[in-house]
Amino acid sequence: MHKKCLACIIGCFVCASVCTAEVLSWRANAGKRFEATVTVTDSLISVDSVVDNPVVVTERDIMQEEAAARKSTIPYLSSIPSFPKGSISPGARWQSTGKVHYNLASFGMDEPLVVEVAVSYTYVGMKTVGKRSYCHITAEWRPVRSFGKAEAAKTGINRISGISRLDLYWDNKAGCPKKASLLEEVQYRFTDGTSLMTRRATDEVFKTTVDLERETIVRNLKSQITSQKVADVDIVETDTGVALSVENIQFEPDSARILDSEKAKLRKIAAILSSFKGNALSVVGHAANPGGSSERELVDLSTARAKAVAAFLSAEGMPGTIAVAGKGASEPLASNDTAAGRSKNRRVEIVIMDKEIVE
Image 1 (cartoon, rainbow, N blue to C red):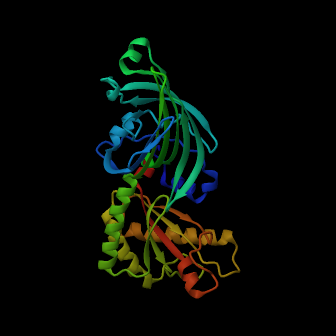
Image 2 (image 1 turned 30 degrees about the vertical axis):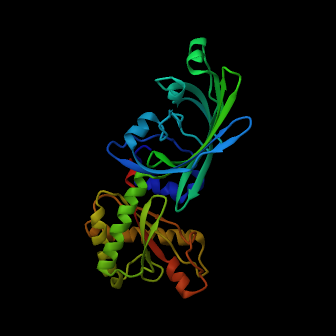
Image 3 (image 1 turned 180 degrees about the vertical axis):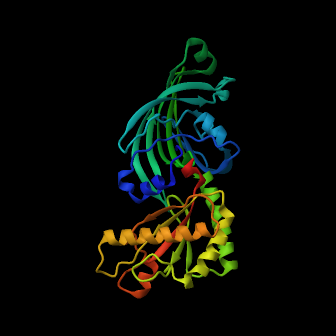
């Protein structure tokens, strides 16, 4: 993602319905890693038998620079997935060339057999997994390779053909997959007239660089909130980062003037946030709706209150510009029919934004 102003970024997430186009790309992120849990299930299928091999589950670290250079997290694939240079919207289709590397050492080939494939992609759209949104992409390719006389004599193989289907959830902030399911069926036709099919299902679930950084932030926040004894503060994840959701910040009635009684709490929060000076901040205001106010009025009020909190944090020494937004009563946490529910809905979220989102 290209560097954007924070106000534009926050505005896009507030108005997500009109911000559907994405420019998808791998990110090199030199020196950074992500973690993968890989589950592989494979079978050998002949005319008269099916042999299911034991399921293999492995945990591994992947250097993001290496994965981005190969454009794959699966060692025997390269340039899968690949993306168009421009922005795409849900329903977009494109093609690109990838490579599949077959290890045929057991058939007498010392070097892997590399087969180029035409990969057909579809961008399905955004999909929420857990607390975050990801780009859902499907892909399909059909490897085919006929062997010349010399190769066939050496390997005993006349032809390799197959079909592969990939179901992918892409973390476009981290520039790597969040999870992927790959189903591959490959048929080997041998010179003696027999054939054999292999079926392999590979499921990958990743902790991306964004996930790992968020885990560190959440641990730090929990420790500091406990030690500082800050009440009525929850830690929640949003699409833009990790938020301190501060319930029921008290303002003067129908205004954005913070009551003096609330400033001590906000000073403690500012002290906690000083640990995250490498991250940009945003403040998002939410309003309760007991009735009698229009949504436009509630958006204006929640925006004004978010600006007041941002100004207070800046005055307490928070560096840089703090983006602000107001969501009115559009995202209630509880019913507005009770005082306790309205207290939860009348909140401000101070978001420690993912570093990747503004790069």
